[in-house]
Image (cartoon, rainbow, N blue to C red):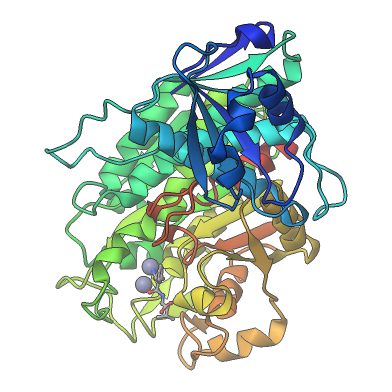
Amino acid sequence: MQIEWKTAPASEWQADALIFFTFEKPGELLPALGKFVKNSGKWLADSPALSDFKGKPSEVTVLYAPAGVGPTPRVILAGLGPVDRFETERLRNASAFALRKCFELGILRPAIAVEALEGFPCAAQNTPPSLEVLLREALVGAMAGLHQFNELKTKNTTVPGCPESLALLCEKPPETSLREIAALAQCEVAGIELARDLTISPANRVTPPFLAQAASEIAARFGFSIEIFDLDAVRSMGMGAFAAVAAGSSEPARLIVLEHAPAGTQNDAPLVFIGKGITFDSGGISLKPAEKMEDMKQDMAGAAAVLGTFEAIGAAGLSRRVVGILPCTENMPGGKAYKPGDVLRSYSGRTVEVISTDAEGRLILCDALAYAAERFKPALMVDIATLTGSSIIALGRDVAAVMGNPEALPEAIRKIGTSVGERFWPLPLFDFYFEGLKSEVADMKNVAGRPAGAICAGMFLKQFVPDQIPWAHLDIAGTAWTDKDTGFTPKGATGFGVRTLFELVRKK
Ligand code: BES
Ligand code: ZN
Ligand code: ZN
């Protein structure tokens, strides 16, 4: 869907439908809708549909102008819920539901008046969000809410109803900052959509070589440099933990190193993003139960989020040096598979006793972290991974866990995530959590007991990060996938993490 700016007097605005947002009744109409109702030749003011509309979150209604009245045949109202509970998330979802309605009805060229985003009161937050923030959220919601993955369907795949463009109407030429933020929203959505497509795709399509190919295409498009290592290379580099996980699969493993170093930044300490790329997690010899095992195609959502972030960075032309490291393999119980009890030598030299082959994510990440720290001397290192079921038990499916060092970093990431609608909550990494990871035969075990599972995984990773390197670990096991349609995220892969990582690069 294209975004098109149009400047004209309000009386000349033309669109197949004009979208407005409304708070839950009782309450005043937002100024732009109030003005439109006043100027619409009374049909709208007299319409019972206007007074019937409650303005609840996810509520959408279409009002039809009498034939021949005015240049806008339809008005779409999208509900924001109670005014005192307003958060930008409500706008993002309302905008998604409005565009979804256009999709259903085959409305090809809807429009939003930019002034419809003005006058938002805001009791829930201290400072009301700026027009830029509101426009960004409305556009991200509008575009990402329409996203579908139909590549593997052979029937009913044509979508004639999909809106072709969304017009942004203004009476005066828009400020540059608004144009820029609209362009930024498009870059973000391209990244989110890529991450969702890769994550929702099955494991017989998205294999490690497929991810390497996707990364190569991004690199070629935006001029990033890329290195791709196969299993032999990974082994000879000394990544014994990663190589052990890959041993049980006949699908070839890949280590992908993607780098964006715009002119003049080659010697800057980079931001390094590391994504867990388990393209299918059967559990290995510690095999998972059959029920819902198909969901484990999503175990590369961390890698997908990093690739999505690079897509967004490239599209937006951000000027920071950023490196992406993606260890990618299946976790399978083949004849050569690693086994519980095995002791592995990691890239760092530290040895690890395998208790469960299903705790494979931390094994591929520990080598990637140690390698990244040594090779790139990062200014900041962030790993993102569908790492533990325990994080879902702790925080549910709408909040990701964040851990890290120094202590202030998780809180900083929580704030940045909140600003773009991704919820994180910090978990502690107290030294005593390491007690449970002590091994009789090696430097550590890959699993402690069941208590504090998400933290123990974070604690395991911490052993491979030099203390002086700022490092955060994002456990997105709960948030990478959704079973409910929220508007902005249709059912399935969410693309969670792309917006936070992208924002980290923008703000750093
Ligand atoms: N990939 C899983 C974690 C996961 C669970 C991701 C649910 C997405 C949704 C991970 O590799 C795993 O199996 N973790 C185990 C660790 C345990 C063996 C210590 C878990 O969380 O049960
Ligand atoms: Zn596992
Ligand atoms: Zn896993």
